[in-house]
Length: 138
Ligand code: FES
Image 1 (cartoon, rainbow, N blue to C red):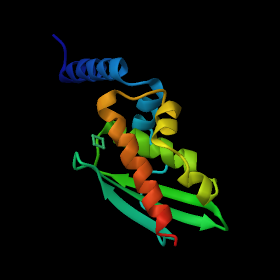
Image 2: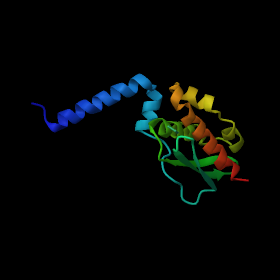
Image 3: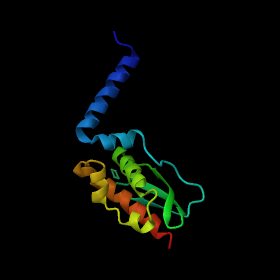
Image 4: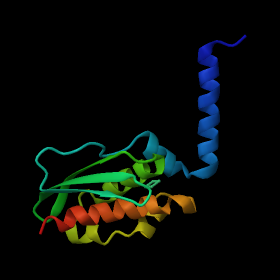
């Protein structure tokens, strides 16, 4: 008879397999190992935004000249939201603010190797939050 650990391993294996049916390897990687997660101390700008689903993302920026030298995010959202915020902050880091502002949801989704249709709003929320934080720079 299997131990409790075997059962947990089996359940975890099923969850991972199900996720792989729905999401690209890049989405799963960014969800499992998010980049730039966490708020920044003394940011030059930050903002929080919520989507219609009720999920919220906060993005924090620190600049060096015109470029984004540090970027962090927090979220209470779903796995795809974490993946979108992680991928978007990775894309924006090191870019000039004007360039980062031009990153679109479509580009983010393409970078992630696609998203299920019901999760494309997670990409919109991430992009809108970044633009909101950039707008606070004045
Ligand atoms: Fe709404 Fe992900 S489910 S932002």
